[in-house]
Length: 248
Ligand SMILES: Cc1cc2nc3c(=O)[nH]c(=O)nc-3n(C[C@H](O)[C@H](O)[C@H](O)COP(=O)(O)O)c2cc1C
Image 1 (cartoon, rainbow, N blue to C red):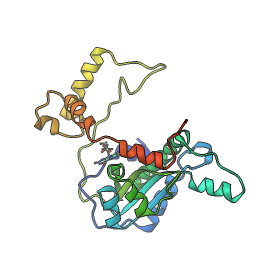
Image 2 (image 1 turned 135 degrees about the vertical axis):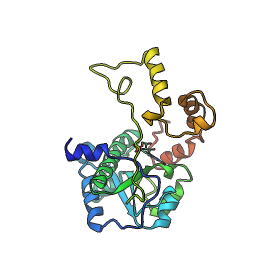
Image 3 (image 1 turned 30 degrees about the vertical axis):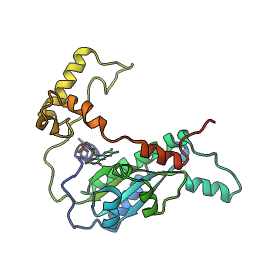
């Protein structure tokens, strides 16, 4: 394995918290410069990265604190301002733009995460920003009200404790398809249910299913996890930011 693959294979979310050790300005700069190297549609870089070192802000935004938080936003403000500055109108970025912008933003975010890991800096991604009233995210960071949407936050820091376990991943049927799409057979579904149940595979995101006496992890997942509070607030925020097309 080369060093890049090793870094990617060592990625893991840190939930135990981060130490007080500061990330150097140089490293933050390297992470940001790496993030913007990610591929992006039409060379538009339809995103913005808002960085904060303010722990109170981090907590309010995401529920987590580290040494630094990077908020990756789908954002057409810059390109619209440029167009306006030059006397053009940039077509409004509805759901089509949102797909391109969120792809750009997600690529940049994952690239930042990998760059950080290569420097010995751990992280946690969170979309907790979407769980409450999104207006406070806009207010706290003075985000443009329209055509800008906070997609995901990356909290960075030095882990207080090295994680020894690693969350599992599916990597076979249903995930990887050769030449053409293959729907799971009933046998493959049964095998996957068992794969999720196997503690050695670390696929379950919580042990609550065992504590709550569910027969299978996926029973708990479909009955409990996916039935958590709805996402209507998120939909309303996307609408407010102008990303939901209105046909009437
Ligand atoms: C968009 C997104 C949001 C996430 N939000 C949270 C979160 O709020 N809390 C958390 O503990 N992990 C969060 N995660 C991390 C995932 O839970 C984690 O990546 C997954 O369980 C795999 O574990 P690993 O990163 O350790 O391999 C998030 C990841 C992504 C991509």
